[in-house]
Image (cartoon, rainbow, N blue to C red; front, side, top):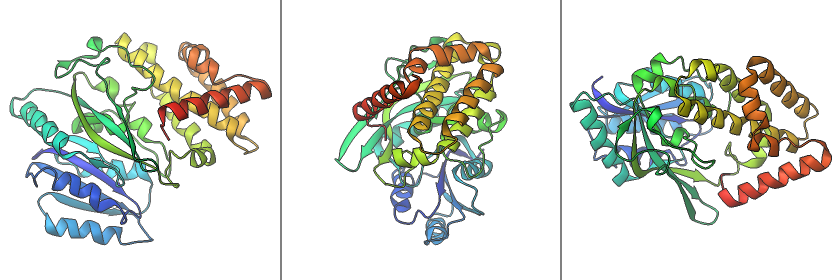
Length: 344
């Protein structure tokens, strides 16, 4: 590894906004020689994404690398960036998002110290900020009550993560070798695979470090974004597919020795299953409810302990009320949470 960190930027018809993302890293880092940016053009067809990526490489040939591939979706673009990474650490930044300059410099200082002193830290967690374009408001997701600040720790030293604190792709900076050795495989042509990315590697991370800075700026507001509610409803089959992969990644009670990590992971999986339940109830697809029931039954057969924790806990209960009235209550609860938390 000849770089401290690699930033992977998946791009698909991204020319309208990708420059801001790339600039925030390349120029935000002061054109640092130990930073690598891998721009993956995932078969763009409608604009000059590839040409813009190549122009960044021409300007910064020792920092920016460009990968062009046939369209495979977000997950395959992330996997390509990992494959081409030369950094000790790896972070994904989506092409419509960006990073904060001051926070980036603080992150680089920490990572450089870990590398210089040969201190093994498998996962660095930072805050992320929802940037709501429609009203100009922000909401920060931070981990001050769940993770000790500025200390290298193991999973047994972490606290309780509440429902707003799940570690998403935006908050995670993994060691690259962890991603390559943990069996991570993000499926092609599938949305919401960032949940797999934020779940499967965790048991392979033995040490973690929480850096309390607002690094990642998560853009919310485009109608075609995958987190847009109407888009989610139209892609409920992909929500189910991602949840199935997460469900089958581990028998958590057998495979994860840390009780606190196990509790966190079953919470994340419960949240995914609950989103599937709500979105399926909103869907007009004729097979949506049957596919949801099939997934829950598969979950029960796969691991009854995990199923009982996910299905019969508070979140699982409130998102799976039966009958027309129950479904309306479930959807009302979801809309209330959506309005309060502004997560899409």
